Length: 400
Image (cartoon, rainbow, N blue to C red):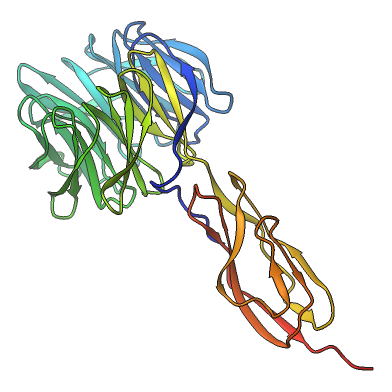
């Protein structure tokens, strides 16, 4: 049985708003999706959101003016950069407290963990120069520093961990490409005006940068290292997140109070969702069910629901039937909204009918033979969930 990923055509809507601390800037989920961390610039705290209940359960004091946050792939710790500090705060996820700090240097901005969790990159900028500090996660020490372009804003690793992209503003309007194994910058990619954030698709084939002063998103073909298209979005785009399934990218438009939904396949904006005031940071839940948007001037987090992906829970009807004998089986699938059912390929046995609303396959077979078909469930939110190939063999009724 196949379960589809949530597409860009999903009916994305804000279903709830969670109060955060004053002037929130960024958000990150734990790998299991149970918690989300929000940095609060003015209160020097990180709000911990319990995702199941949609409430803030605690506020963790961190270094002054927290900006960015990232959670380690194993879920054990979170790193928080602070704009008015030279250190990164290390949060122990289990205890919900800062366990240590790591000295970085002037103006640490963005942070990202490598996919293997062995290292983390932190961007720093000052006096027109820019660097990336490479932290050994096990020791909590800075192992090396990589020069990059000026005013490095965001950093992201490719899914295979071989490459890291860093956005560079201050009129440089480019992305710095780092070879992770070599620990060095290898090239730069020109993008739009004032790039702020960057995110890779799960397959590593594309990367998206938000161009804050260009009101656009640049789509980078990772293999060639070139921009293949530029997508107009809302005013002053800030953050970008790609859905776990890779079908859609979500962009916060800080000057418009909206989120643009981009279909990855077509590189087109398919919808625009109204968020709070000045949305900046954004993150997609690991299960693809929602997107969290940080509203800096509303002191809140908008929860954009993408609907529940469809999955069959009953899809193994009897494979044998008899003419003149009643056949009855009910297909069932989870999903929100509730799905309807239809035959997606093949042919039902003559005399049988599939009820679209209930998923009940019933009737009295009227013709002997083998009939092969597939059944799909759809709800307009997720791609159809489709059964494996089903074969029902109908035999003639014995005449006594």
